[in-house]
Image 1 (cartoon, rainbow, N blue to C red):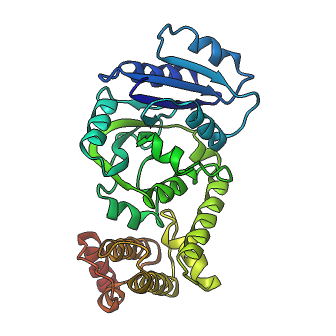
Image 2: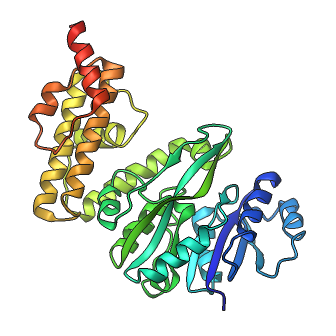
Image 3: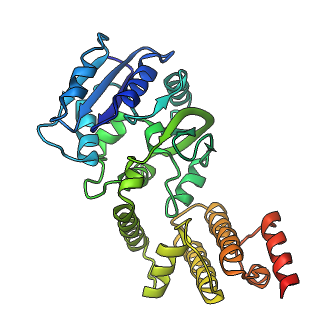
Length: 337
């Protein structure tokens, strides 16, 4: 039995992108793995023909009888896997040569960790060359889960037995947010971590899911937030929920009035106060995440609404720290007043 099952769904993938993804897995320094490729576009015979050009016994090729969608394909891949560890892989990305080796060694050395991701570098047609490092520690990861995906899904490796024994599956109601539900489920039974070194390259292009299905993903985020609040006994008003969905966790929002910024501050402080009594996330990590998002939205308000947030930051109970760019913006706005 191999040590690692590398799991990769494919769907109408550009052949050049698929070649780069497959080659990056086959060139890993760690070689004891099976590479399970599941075609979710069975009508695309070009993909089958391309995979058949490889004569590597580690490749196991399957096709869905019909297109099932990404979450159902992930679950079928989990059912097909046989190894101790499962590693996810996107069909158009690149795993750097030492990725599997580093994650395998990490999990072997840290039996308390059940799932580990890595830092990654963006490349492709847009957003090129940016390096993304997510929180490294379990407490930071779980404190961030409400706000964003704190582990980059195609970089993860996890102990397959934990998923099997605890019936952890991908949420098939989601197209994109199924990964955050997965982390939440794993976080209830084990610890999560991120390796801070870049071991993965994430391709940006116009046909990627996050570009094609923006509205669907936005709706899924709202559903995830709603379920998370309900699970943890948090009751928000309609206005508070809307503010959280549309401004707190939406990076590309534009805050143009002081009332909206005041409401965001109120919502973040309310969440921090709820955690003091309900203990749904570690402290001080959760309070620090709330403070970070308040700073980010104050910067947004300074740019798009020309709003000076100095008084808001002075009066908040959140543990905000000085931010050079925000201080410059507020000083400039004070001079303009």
